[in-house]
Length: 180
Image (cartoon, rainbow, N blue to C red; front, side):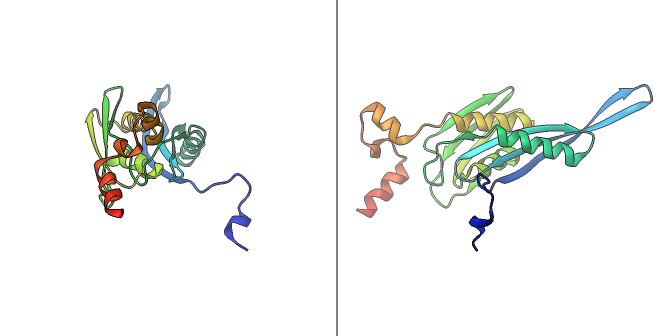
């Protein structure tokens, strides 16, 4: 029997990454009450990614809640092979994230929360830069906002009335010409 046969219908392999666990405190009559907040990113590695935040009195419960919310909030991302189709910049609160396509073999040039989101989405070659606030929640939300702005190259070429080759990144056009 293969693994696919044993897996229940509708269950897919997801990459889960805990980005941050933070302890919060609330002052009560008897002293401080501690709770935990977990920030999690979930993706299928094929162009779908989601983030979730969970709060609870215990760490495992906070992570479980965050994973549940992340699975429900997954969005589709337009990818071009192992990279993104075009440069994009997005802002959330005081954080800005700039993403730029990279040629194959470059890897994910990104830090912390941005890297986790990109790897969960299945992006393997990309250059990124974070500006402003480095709060993990804001960086994750800005990165997802940037990924949602990505357009499909074939659809964009059709809208512009140009051939697909003119819309593709330069290194992809070069690879096409070498193949011919």
